[in-house]
Each structure stands twice: as structure tokens, then as C-alpha cells.
Image 1 (cartoon, helix red, strand yellow):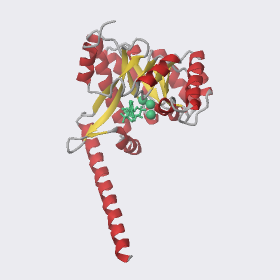
Image 2 (spheres, rainbow, N blue to C red):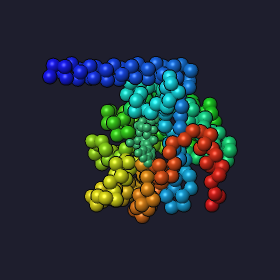
Image 3 (cartoon, rainbow, N blue to C red):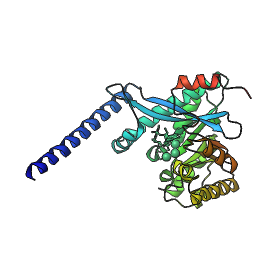
Image 4 (cartoon, rainbow, N blue to C red):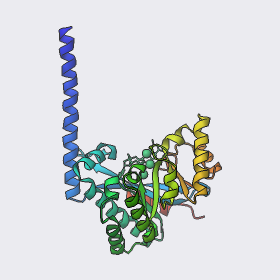
Length: 278
Ligand code: C2E
Ligand code: CA
Ligand code: CA
Ligand code: CA
């Protein structure tokens, strides 16, 4: 029994050591990427669910690991937030995404690029000026930029949040509420804030077909959003059935592995170039 205990201890401590090593390595990769401005931004196309054409894309950040692997955001966004690096990370992702949107516009594809904004970045005192400057510098029309914010970004300070959203909206930038239905926010947020788009969280899309109640919730979300003048984007569409169901309940747009995974900028350009003209 004693040896088992010891082995178990060794086993756990080895795991812990591996985890620690991984963390240290990821932190190092993040700092290096920020220094060299070499974060990887991929784009997941969004589709009009009726016509099946591409309407825009969501920018999703990745990190090149020391061994050349691709590190997903869930592994480093948390650390970036704790360490304050999230501000620089967010700025660089915006910068890259705006440049991509500009290239697209030049190539005859004026498509909207949606960028995820963390709560901390959203509440930077000069966020609106920063965005305005970046758009001006790139000469990108503001309606080609969309920001995806989560409920937690809107929950801190009501007055301040409303001010920021109002300013962004008067700049012409559209705002999507991400992961809708997963947080603790009340429905009244939808009425109190100037939002443009509501993203139906992947968890609902996933359960929708098997679970009548999940389907009913999505139905209600769609009706509510439409009655408030919001547009809907369904997340995490993995099957033709999910696409069909969302289309039937009048969800306008969607994204998911069924259509395309997040892809590099060049692959996104090729995808657009090869899209059948309608
Ligand atoms: P999110 O904003 O909810 O992004 C959607 C996530 O779902 C992405 O994961 C995307 O790759 C994944 N996804 C898309 N379609 C499907 C599907 O059909 N099935 C499944 N299973 N997954 C799908 P990813 O890229 O790993 O990003 C995870 C989260 O990291 C994002 O969730 C977002 O909260 C955060 N994130 C990503 N990029 C940024 C960024 O630039 N800044 C900030 N602050 N957060 C970011
Ligand atoms: Ca998002
Ligand atoms: Ca989401
Ligand atoms: Ca999500």
C-alpha cells in the first residue's frame, strides 16, 4: 500500500510538473509573440443561412508554440487577463483583423470582420478613441468592423457600459453579444444597451435537435431578439440538420464546422475567390 501511495504521489507530481512546464512555455510563447507582433489570427466564415453565401468572419487568435504547434486561446487568454497582457494582445488582434478587412475590401469583398473583445479591453478608458484611430489609419469603413463582447463585459458598470456602447455605435461599429444565454445576465440587457447582434451559444445549437426545451429556448431567443431589432448568428453549426432548424426559425446567419473551421487569412481569401457568384 505504501509503494502504491508513493507511486501515486510520483504520478501526480509528474503531471503537475508537466502542467507547470507547459504553462511556462505558453507564457514564454505569448510574450515572444507579442514582442514580435506574431500572433496568429484565423478567420471563421459566417454564412447567410438562406443563401449559403459568406457574410463575414470571426477573428480567432492562436499562438505558435515553441515546438511549432498551434496553441488555442483557451490555453492563454486566462493568463493574458491575469497578467495584463490582454490589452496588448487585444490591440494586436484588432490591428491584424482591421488590416485583413481592408485587404478584403480592396479585393472587392467588403465583408464584416468580428473581433472578440475581453471585458478588460472593453473597459479601457480610451477604447473608443483607439478604435477610431485604428479605423482611420487603415481607412476602413467602420461598418466593416464588429466587436463581440460577452455578458460579463457588460455587467460591471451600467452607466459606463452604456456610454461605451453608445459611442461605439455612433462610430458605426456594430456590437454582437457573444455566448448569449450562458451567463447570468438578465434579458433586460437587450433592451437597455444599443446592441446589433445576438450570438446563440453553441450549447443551444448542440442540444436543439435532441432536446425540445433547448429548441424552444432558441425559438424564444430568436423572437425576442427580432422584436428588439437585433440580428441573430447561430454558433457551432456542425450538421445540416442544425443549419436547417436555425434557418426555419429565421436565424439570419451562422458559423460552424459544418461550413468551415477557422482558417488562415490566405485560405479565407481563396475560399471567397472560389465562392460561386449568386
Ligand atoms: P468564442 O468567441 O465563443 O468562439 C467560438 C469558438 O468555438 C472558437 O474556439 C471556434 O473555433 C469554436 N467553434 C467554431 N465552430 C465550431 C463548431 O462547429 N464546433 C465546435 N465544437 N467549436 C466550434 P476557439 O478559437 O478555440 O476560441 C475559444 C474562445 O477564446 C472564444 O470563444 C473566445 O472567447 C476566446 N477568444 C478567441 N480569440 C480571442 C481574441 O482575439 N480575444 C479574446 N479576448 N478572446 C478570444
Ligand atoms: Ca466570439
Ligand atoms: Ca461565442
Ligand atoms: Ca462560446
